Image (tube, rainbow, N blue to C red; front, side, top):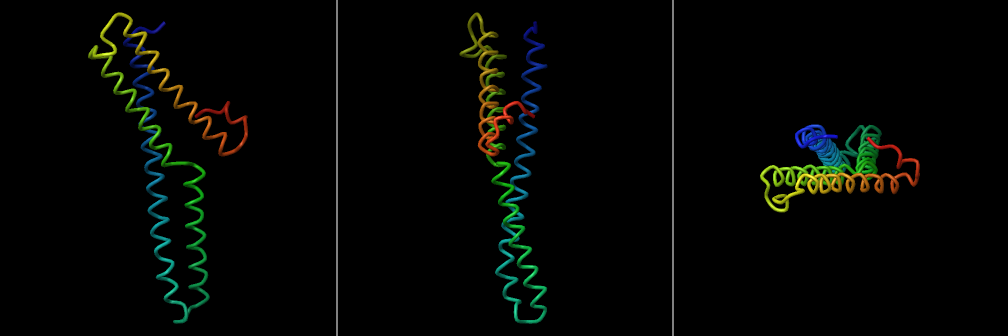
Amino acid sequence: MLNEAQYMEQRIDDQITWYSGKSRRNKISYRTLRILSIIIALSIPILTGFIGKGHDDMMKVTISVAGALVALFEGLLSLYKYQENWIQYRSTAESLKHHKFLFETRAAPYHEAGAFSQFVQVAEALMANERMSWVQGNQSKSGNKQDEAVVE
């Protein structure tokens, strides 16, 4: 059985760190792919202006590759849902922090007897909700029920 200090360190702090790290990585992935997609998409009309001025075959290949890269980046953004994951993980981390601070300061709703038990229930519910969102998102991506058993 974990006491308050152990639960805070081993469960809450660990989960806040995990959600914050995942949020950060998803944010970086989202912004990187989105910026590359925008830059490459913007280059296509510029590159088409060079067709007919020599090296047409090279220009056509370059434009084709640029279009394929935009489609690839947009497909990856859609498939891996980096923006949605970034927001969901950040939201869960911030909610856990919020309730942790309320509990540690014994502010409402954690100011009465049984506060630790109530805090644990709220924290575990927040994490369970995030896990359910993850499972549902992965089911809709693959349509495979076996994905439910695979949790990162």
